[in-house]
Length: 406
Image 1 (tube, rainbow, N blue to C red):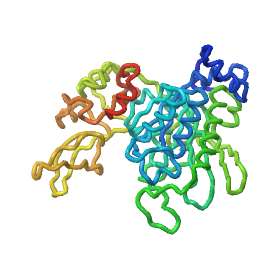
Image 2: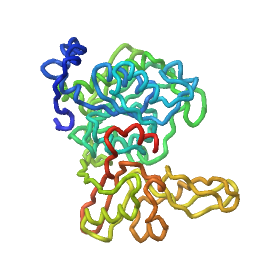
Image 3: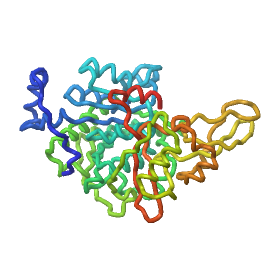
Image 4: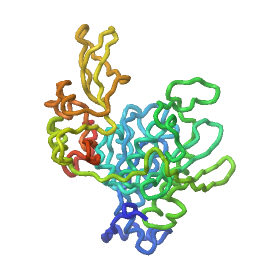
């Protein structure tokens, strides 16, 4: 089993031993398992029907959790989610978890693709509790690269059945990942959620499922993660899928075949720290640090998950040359002064120093260019292996504050 799955055990203080004395005697926490579990940190992506319940149960059981979600609660969510209209879902989850064990959940109200990747790398196990199929590729590649086990949690939202699914993706540790059965069309087209039966529906139709099904699915995922972290039953969990069929009153346990030709490559990454301040650093400084790290001057830099937009358009019909990621503020229209929109059909994945200079962005700060704190750059040069470089880690304890800046 990969060493990244089992965290270092930590001793319990007197208050913890009193609080968790019964839980420590439960399966799977016997024989020192609870000390390993309580030393872990869980990453939960999505704070809706599944993620919110998972967070609360994890904190209740002694875990430390970091949860990512940019969504704000709506009135229509209140039948199956513990959110509040007009408030970030993660803030409500934090409030509830702080009532259980203060300070054991960190709320990051941003898209996980724009989050500090060091936060994810610092977590023991990940949970994908979103309903966004477009996250399958980036989260799987990241979990493979950082060698982290990820549990993909989902429910049937058609309203016709009560079925929950938990898939254990562990491609970095020699098992199947959730992309092993995918082909290029599955991965690289823009997916839309399946509409409800008999409806063409909006682009993102609602999930028609009850909280009871979500609670069962979240509980199953948490139980599997607990066993994985403490090292019990891992041969029956890693690279498997679990289907909770409450319509037929059964649970199915399926082994997933590992595809050696998986498009993710199941590659584990070696990363280096990039000595550039992720708040005030410039792209020129990133190029200089990357050239030093890779030992060459003719390099190409890719801002991982953040391709460059090079044009923006306006409703008035004007088009302007401008550069920034999807998270950068687009320019104002030179004709009507309204805020423009990025032309995402025209994007550049990587650039040389000369290209960046021609765009006029070398002296721009990473923040104004829409590059998140803790971002990863991939540096390539002829005759050298690609290097993955992470921006400098922000100050300890600043996760929630930095998450709100993204």
